[in-house]
Image 1 (cartoon, rainbow, N blue to C red):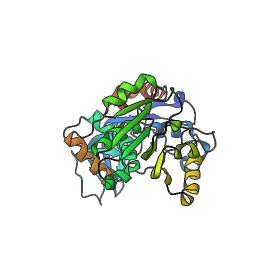
Image 2 (tube, rainbow, N blue to C red; image 1 turned 90 degrees about the horizontal axis):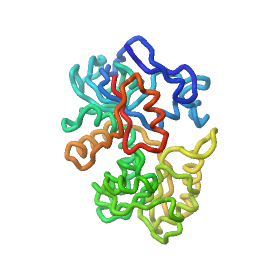
Image 3 (spheres, helix red, strand yellow; image 1 turned 60 degrees about the vertical axis):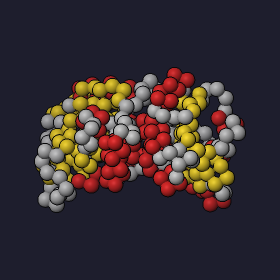
Length: 322
């Protein structure tokens, strides 16, 4: 089968097409005929092997898994002996191992039936980014409507879903983005869009019940200035920082400070769970949230798609189809 593989860490130049064996189905797995895959910043981190901390999990000299891509939508081709939820022909979306290929293996508990209202391309644009946003906004789901939410990096993949989800949960949403993307943030449903180049947002005097930082490098101390007395700060992922630990030290610092203040300060390393995919499927089917696709690339241009992912110009998700 055709696939996009890498044999060393580096830029998108390390990605190249190859003919490889179709993966074998384990007892708890489903084999997917990939119809679409989408890229997110985690794919870039694995490709680059950065920060170096991630190599402790994915391989020191080269990635243990040669085929890139995690977010997927496709048809079930075969199921393992222990799988009862799915059968060949079912249309699903979720996460897998090696989505940039004609076929991929996924654990049965990492995929969910595809909402009928979505195309395969739209469904592939959902899993990791939307689940991360959903988990980051967990406090809203029990707080009720009217909470004030600030989303830093609101025009990014996670931030874009966070804006839509926060509005679906009844929050008053302020999004922070670059000047060129303020209109995009408002189109997602934000009540207010702030230009991060026009002054220091931490000195605005505004206070929020929840601050979701999806793309900044502001210190935990400065972010606390944006919180209400019992507000919550959620730092998503590990972007920024140095090549060794990236931005993970901010999350660690938040956890260390949190016990000594009235606010809740935490980091989030999201894990895609079936229950979250199920929740998102309902919201997608109802139209409460919707994927935004920047561009669809053929599999042969996966390296170009990866470069586009990090050039700062995209609105929504980059999708790849076999």
